[in-house]
Length: 103
Image (cartoon, rainbow, N blue to C red; front, side, top):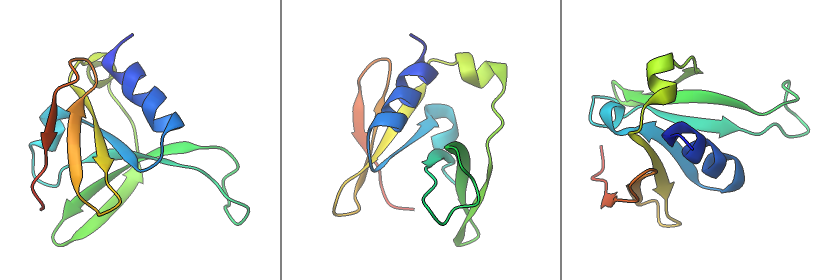
């Protein structure tokens, strides 16, 4: 299974997680991908992925379009958000975990 397959499976089955690539997460804005699950008041009827970045003091959200390079990359990570709001990152392929400092 590729790194993306591993993180996507976790994203679909667990709560309070997001996914990213290690390469992306080290950049400004810490981009991450989230799963939107529609509820009874949603216009959308199916689940979909969107990206979120923290830029100029607020979050920007937009649809995800991944390149072949990203889909096949092995540096995919899961961002876990604890009940206290603390985040940590673990690499899907290697299982290495590290704490994340706030923005």
